Image (cartoon, rainbow, N blue to C red; front, side, top):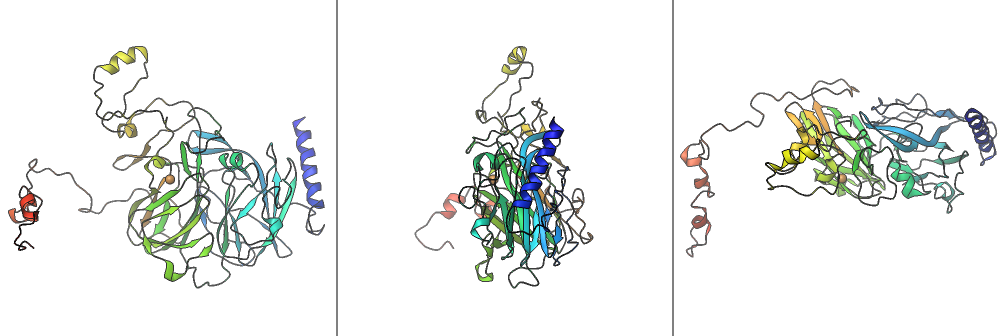
Length: 466
Ligand SMILES: [Cu+2]
């Protein structure tokens, strides 16, 4: 019954494709293969086997969609469908996506390419795709009802336009958007420049990912789609720390990181150890005179930012959203602040009634990073991830930029933990408590921060203390 239903659906799909649009019957004789991806790992960059050359991107915990050339047209086949996304090992969520994953595959083309995208709808409701940021004919913009009829269940529509502007773009449905984006339907689109572009630098590493958020009640399998602000899963490309791949760079590499935001709130993306410039937005390359150095840049809802920097400081550098609640895993929002509350004696009494009962938060929440809490069957810890020096106490939108000397070109493998050179790591003070073990001349009092600070800093009326 199901097999027959599926075959009927495929036949309808192919039939509609032949009947749709201005594409010749020859071009439409067979749909391009809808390549499926079963893994949530970061796929190696897809070097273009044909068409104009370009330097491919690496999609964090994602992949690039293979295409076929058809009389000079780049043809892609996206299938909108329910998927199971492994957001972290042991934490699988029922999402909607494209070609087996959420986000869908990254589309990579070159400025000037004619692109034909077949979109097959295997969702239980209609959909469309909007090509966020693209210059294209109005009828290809994908707003259901406004620019085109919705793509019904089981049907395939064809989008076709020339990639006119180089840059970083996104795609997502413009049909029942609240539900479909809350379920993970989104993807990246990169249009590489043809030849050298005065505002687009050559880089050795080019990373891309989307910021996304879900509301998955701990223990459940499917996001709540009506949630407006109270999300509990904060992800890079539908993946949460420590399951997000690191961004690996060779010492001295110029690195580009393309970040798009399809959540319901802004995310200040922060990178440690280096300074970057925002060299492009979804509106295009930023003029050189409009760039300034940053270590954090806010990526607002519906925005794309291209960050570029020189990876000239070796180490394992944190790269994360600076909203501290977004570097947390699933948590109950009703947890009261317990800092300063003394639970001694109470725990044993409660444990007689509730054997799993644990106290958290009376000294802050750091205990969460090391506590092995009994978790519901399908979720992940609130603060997790272990580094070489213990629990990292992070989750959600957090990963690392790993800068190493001597990596091979195109080697994206995790190089492991950074070995701190001797004498370059923070160390434990083991002197006499409270008394600085320094020469008297350099003691805090002499610097104006000791017991005499008050009188030393007060205006004296003579104007002589400078
Ligand atoms: Cu954030």
